[in-house]
Structure formats: structure tokens, C-alpha cells
Amino acid sequence: MSSAAVQTPPPFTVDDYLARARRVVAAASERGLSGVLVTPGPDLVWLTGYQPTAITERLTVLVLAPDQEPTLVVPTLERPDAEAAEGVRGMKVVDWADATDPYLVAAPLLRPDGRYGISDSAWALHLLGLQKGLPGTAYESLTEGLPMMRAVKGPDELARLTAAGAAADAAYGEIVKVRFAGRRETEVAANLAGLLRHFGHEQVDFTVVGSGPNGANPHHEAGDRLIQPGDAVVLDFGGLMFGYGSDTTRTVCVGEPTQAIRDVHEIVRLAQEAGVAAVRPGATCQDIDRAARAVITDAGYGDAFIHRTGHGIGVTTHEPPYMVEGEEQPLVPGMCFSVEPGIYLSGRFGVRIEDIVTVTQTGGVRLNNTDHGLALVE
Ligand code: ZN
Ligand code: ZN
Ligand code: ZN
Image: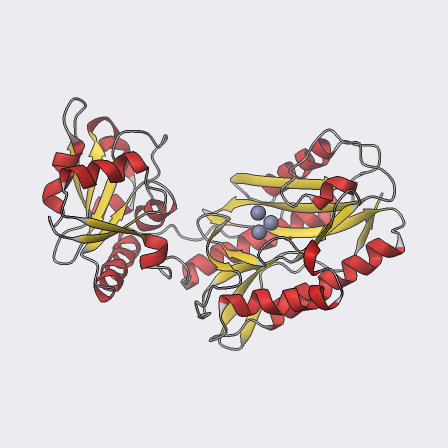
């Protein structure tokens, strides 16, 4: 099992991070926001490269606003770690000590009558603290206010997502060679996690192994069930490589599949194909859901496709925008998201097929390219 030689992309520089911060401020102004408050989580990672070792009750917030230097408010004890982050090197850092009021430290950075976009990952504790300290301020979810903030990936981000997708594909290429029959789901899941790491992932987020009836639960991870000959097995796995996500699903069969498994697998394969084929600039997120769902509904399994068709991916493995009915956000070149229809037959089996797709001028390009047919495993 050779490990593909993947070149490590050059790290993001302080200028890369500052350029992102400037774009966010411009977009916020355009939306009539006074600025943006970024708390620990994916938004802060994307804007600074800083991820506190533990996200806690102590306030950490990056304040971005026009005509103002990007300023990170941190607990005094976290200051050294924060300042070690590449993006933070280009920003102002203000700290607050225990037994002082962090909201008083943050207050001068905000307009008393301002309206701010705030990270979805912000704790209610902190938002309530800011509102109490500055009763004239108003807040809105960054996902609502700036839905495209992290959605459109630059070439440096696409390179990472492409590498992560290729590594996940390499893991799939190996997992179909291991024995399934007579082993527990958790054992195959452990094989998958090891393979993702082997092919370069620094973090494994999930390794779903849903065998037989367990496959009918889309979020079943892996359990003690012994995999049986004849089982359909949903394999959905991903994590982070170079800080960017992978997420792919294939459904395999242990030995000879029943006609029902073959038929349902083929419907899902065609639905996934239709979802990917619908990707083009100007189509909306809900168009992708509709295209995939129509195939499944027309085949009579509409009630068995019980989730949205996809989600964005970037510095996390699940993020906005969502490929779901009602999401009218238009697709833009550089966006990356999953197309993952499924059919779930309670008590019997499930089938899901998932690729990450990026939008280009001429349509969707898959970042996962393993065979979409029903693979037979031992
Ligand atoms: Zn999921
Ligand atoms: Zn997945
Ligand atoms: Zn997914």
C-alpha cells in the first residue's frame, strides 16, 4: 500500500489572512453591518489560523470593522498561543485578565449603536454579555448576514480540498480489500481511520460503517454488529488534511447482492449523477437537491430519502451552504459541497453515494473519483 506523494501546500501567510479579513469587512459594509465578531471555531481558523486549545467560557473574539485595525480580544493566559498564530501576527491583540470584565475590554471596539454579524459558533454566554454591556447593539448570524464568507474557495484552498479528496479516495481503494464478513463494524471503522491517516489526514472526523439494517440510519457511526454475508454496507468517512475537509460515501456489498440492493443502489447512483450534472454557475443550491431528489422520487422512493442532498465543506467537514429545498443561494465558481443522496429502508438496508464537487465555469468537477458502481467485498 503505497502512500501517494502529495506535496504539502505552502502555509497561508499573514497577508493571506489579512486579505480575507479585508474582504469580510467589505462584504459586511455592503450588507449594512457595522462589523463582524468572530469567535473561536471555523470562522476564526479561516481568518487567523488560530484555534484555542479549548473553547471555554472565557471570551475570545476577533473584531473586524471598517477603518479599524483587526483586533483580537483574548484572555491574558491565552495571549502567547494566540500571538503564535500566523494570521494574528498581523492583527492587534488586546487581553483581559481573570476577575476583570471582558465585555468592558471589547466594548470600545464596538459602536454602541452598531449592528454586527457574529459567528454561529459564538456561545450564548458571550453574545448575552456583549448585549448587556452594549444595550444599543444588535447582532445577526454570520451565516445569514454573510452566507458566502467562506463558501467560495480560492485556488490555495481548492488545492487542499483536492488533496483531501484524493486521500479519501485512496483510503476507499484499500478498504474494499479488507475482510468485512464476520468482523464488527467498529473494526472496519478503525481500518478506515487508519487508512485516512496513512494517506495524509491529520484528523479523522467520522468513519460510518452502516451494515445491513444499520445502514438505514444515515447517522449510524459504527457499532458492535457483526457484518454478515449479503449485507449492504454504507461507508461514509472524512476528516481534515492540510486543514481542509474530505467527506465521501460509497455503499458496498458483502458477497452477492440481492436484486433489491442492486436496484436501490442504481437509483441512488443515477440520483447522485443527476445532482452533480445540475452543478453550474447560476444554478441554486436547491436546484441540486431537486435534481437528485427527482430521480429518487420518480423511482418511488421519495419517502426514503430523508435528508438534504448536500452541505458545504472547507475548514470543517460540514458547513453552509446547504443543498436543500428553500436555499436559493446561487452557485459560484470555487464553491465546494457534497452531493450525497441516499435511500434508507428501515429494518433492511441503506444506500448513499457521496462526492465533494466544486463549481467551475463549465460545471461541477468531482473531488472524489472512485468508482460509483456497487463494489463487492469479502
Ligand atoms: Zn452528516
Ligand atoms: Zn459523508
Ligand atoms: Zn457529507
